[in-house]
Length: 359
Image 1: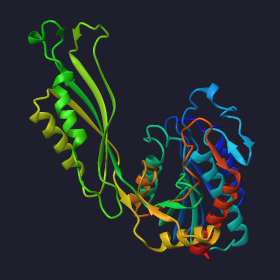
Image 2 (image 1 turned 90 degrees about the horizontal axis):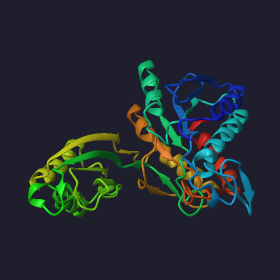
Image 3 (image 1 turned 135 degrees about the vertical axis):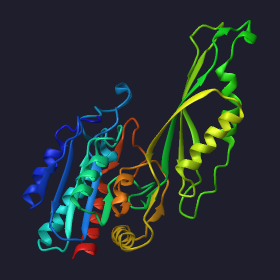
Image 4 (image 1 turned 180 degrees about the vertical axis):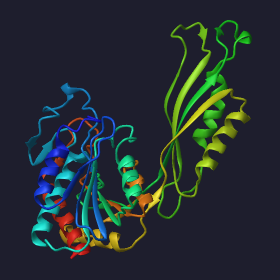
């Protein structure tokens, strides 16, 4: 679990090292990061992913130990099976097969792997990108192995993501007795009208490629636990997943304007998890789409839906980014699993992408 790596990156490094990759460990704090590269010239093709996983949740609800992989009825079960150990495994085996068949391939193949994707995402890919930028290294094409497929392997690839802006809100009131509300100021009552307006607001209509901006409250708490005390303070966490038609400044100003109009006394801290990025149709999208179709017989759907990924940190390097991985239906759930046949299919897709771009 984040930020533990459990020896995954060492295992990957051993395989890649034997195939001629230069291996570089870039730990920051408790986070393990791996940068591996084969070749010195451009263009640079990068596989990106993470070795950390989320907690397993209630163990008694799993039908097998979440940290002991088990194959049942054609599915591989375990925490991280879909998000995203399978993607990493297929990336590594695909690179090894491609290098063996094309030892003199053009350009470079790289791996950027972290153990901080499911956590704060502060000492992982973000920090490795800072190192690469300081050294003048760039990434031209990047395939992130996140579980992008919806119903069947390869039916969907991600070509971008919305931005993520979070707020930590404190509403200030005056504590008092519920029988004497005139002597108190209830922060729950003060916030309620503003919160209703924020939740009901149509922020925008999105774009051709992006869903509209959405506002969601993820946590809210107030009160002492006693039924006869008006709370003196309310704390709330909220998030805005926003499309490129918005700006951070505009979103912050709108939220704070609504709070002020409803006379909310507040303190507010803002956190930016990532800004929107988008890879328009071009060389990488064509290569990945055709590589998938070669295996499945159909072109994948292009999407920017879902949560954030570490692609948001790699995009500022000027890279074209596509996410291609297994089916996402069970990620972060009890009995997380992946169809075993999909592992081989994903491996072939990755090999096809490398062949189309670097031969």
